[in-house]
Amino acid sequence: MKIFNTANMGLLKRALDVYNKQHEALAENIANAHNPEFERRKTDFSKELDATGASRLKTTDPRHLGSPVYPEGPFFMDDEKEGGPVDLPQEMGELAINQIRYDFVSRVLNRMYRKLNASITGRTS
View 1 (tube, rainbow, N blue to C red):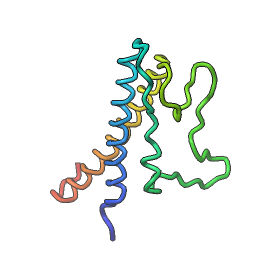
View 2 (view 1 turned 30 degrees about the vertical axis):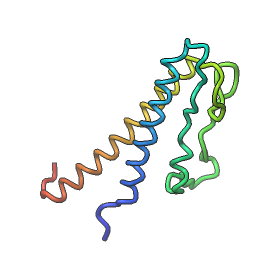
View 3 (view 1 turned 135 degrees about the vertical axis):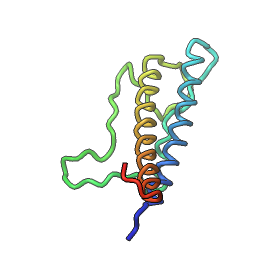
């Protein structure tokens, strides 16, 4: 019986690295928002997680969403575009979303380590 899933742990560690890299890019975009010579850096690194194939969600019902849907319009920038002006409210929103994702993955990884520690030491709390 497999007690500890190391494949999931590796994916979670990789997700933390990706979200950290994304945070740095967003912070750089925000810091240079008023610099007219600065070109926006790409901030969508989610494809790096998809390269493993392990991050794909499994759907059990046709009504489940397969991938996130992002609205388009004058206040939303396409993540695939690099360069151009920085839309400060959009960057701040993406920064908040990225922080929530980082915190979630961090908590899940922390829970896995606590369970492993409890199983090694024999403690239940």
